[in-house]
Structures are given as structure tokens and as C-alpha cells.
Image 1 (cartoon, chains in turn blue, red):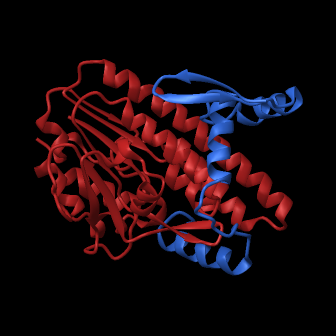
Image 2 (tube, rainbow over the protein chains, first blue to last red):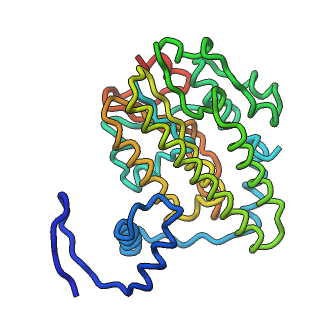
Image 3 (tube, one colour):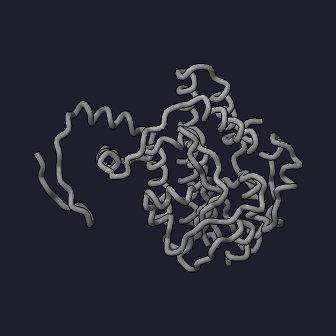
Length: 78
Length: 232
């Protein structure tokens, strides 16, 4: 169910989310820069529906080796 | 005058995430081609002294380099009556914090197995975010005080970027926060990074240009050593 309202210059609607998920989000964002569950949910949804689809990066030993060498050259890994 | 000094702020991500506060009215890339490598300590030291400090900093060796402390008299900060500089490498940065980050970085690369690496990465990210919050608080307090020059140095994009630059969500969250910090500044300011960052799989490496922005002048493609002259 969606209802609509207005907050600052943007228009906002409401969606129902299970309380269990809200609780998990609260835990998830407690050590981040997100100030509220709303802010986090908007951020994630914007990202999910964004047109800029990029393949998810995965760990590779080759990348790790390359970065390790670069970080040594830059003085981080003396 | 206020300087928002952001380590590894990447021009292409500022564009991609449309960070309007960081971009201000005029923005572009800095030219750091005179340096053999985009080293953080070399670049910030060169920024504050107005001269290429590469030879001098590298002569100290990789370990001692991080202990560089340039005297106020040798920097353009001395032109101001009451300058407030927060956590700047080469001047007054929190050595223990940044040393801890480098130890965890080394531990990450030395660790065997994904579980151990993930555990170290989480700890590494957490201490970087905690430090970021402390710097943010100090910066906000400095903005409220009556300093004629404030420089706040934010290292989060660099520190977290090295192990997470391929994590778009995390980087977007960091850029959003940095953009909000820029949005809180009520007077004229300059945003400056020493270098940017480029993706190597999930990791990040320094790119060969920095970022600048102002709300008062298009300064083109300046060298990092020119900012002492640009800042009035």
C-alpha cells in the first residue's frame, strides 16, 4: 500500500516493510554514515533501479597481487 | 578561507554520483605529472610548501616518510592569523591512526583465506569510519569557531577505497557523505584532492590526477604546488 506526503522539496510516499527487516536495517546501519532507516532504504533502492548497471566486482588473486605491488611502491606496505 | 582536503577523491566518481556540493561552480583535475608516483605524503607536503617535495620526502625512506612534520613557517598557512589544520599528512596528522590503518592493510595482504581477509577488511573499514567521524566533528567545530583559515583533511575515500573501490555501493555511500560535508560549508571554499583512484577489481589504486573545485574561479588544470598562490 502506498500513501503520499510531502517532505521538504521532494514528494514522498509510504511503503510497508516487515518490522523484522527494519530491525535488521537498524543493526546494519549503526556503524555507517546513514542517519535513518529511510535514508538507507532510499539509497539502496536508487542504486538498485539505477540505469547504470555495472558488473559486480569479485576478488581475484591477480588483482590483489597488482594492488599489493602498487601499495608497496606508494609506501603503504613497508 | 576553507579547504576541504579529500584524499583520493576521484573526478569520475564525483561526476558519476553527481556530487553537486563537491563540484561547486567550477571544477576540474589537478596536474601531478611532475611526480614519479602519486604518493600521499609527497603530494600534501608539496601542496602546503608550494614546491615539489618528492626528493626530500623519499630520502626519508618508506617508514620515516610517514613521520614528516613540516613547520608552519615553511607553509603558506603562515600567511593566516589563526589557521586551523585538521589531520593533514606532513603537518599534523594523527600518526597512530594512520599507522594502524597501514598495519591492517599489510595484515590483509598477508592473510591466508577469504574468511581471514574479510575479517581484517571489516576491522580496517570500521576504524577508518570511526576516524572519519572524529575528523568530521572537529571540522564542524572549526567551522563554528572564528578561524581565518580552516583545512579539514578527510582520508576515508583513500583508506576504504584501497580495499573496496570495486564496491560501488560503499563508495557511493562515502561520496554521499563527503558531498554532505561540503554542503554544510556556508562560506567560500576549495575542494582539493591529492590524487584520484582507479578500480583494480575490488581494489583501488591511485590515479595520476587530483580533483579541485571552487565557487569563485575556473583555475584550469593547476599543479598542486600552485594552490598556495591561488588561496588568498
